[in-house]
Length: 229
Image (tube, rainbow, N blue to C red; front, side, top):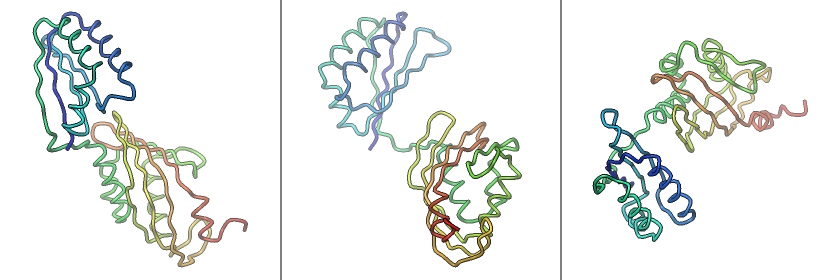
């Protein structure tokens, strides 16, 4: 179970504290078990800071605490604070990166073929970057392209992996389907096909506003017997 530690402190020497944290990161390379660290400043009190440190588990957090480098840095940290920092230990019982959830739902919807519902969470000024197209396209063209894929293939989409960073989500996916209609001039073959790819989605105010696509189009054409024609 993911474990999070909140470190609550007060200091008027944050620049020194920041350098101290950089020193800890450098000194614990290859040893630390922390996976994510975030520091927030209280908007109503410039001397009040909270550091949030994430670990894969409580046991990994204890391993991290027992590093000699962590002990030394903690003593230096206390010296920079106006009072002894307080610690809150939390087992994470719910963790949802909402943009990542929405990206997954987008691919699930793409596999179901409900085009109207699929594009409900896509912004009107959506911009699509697809290497198969000569130029970037907008929302209307994206809808037409999805409809074209649905006419050519009876397919489903499987989400294999996802990473989320700030306003962007990267999804690694697998397309599985049967060729039952014209595709780039290739008449229906009845061939079962698979294709892998990755898509970066950018989000704004809870809506998908931009996408970058990379996928094995050549592999798909090969499965359809089209290469070399």
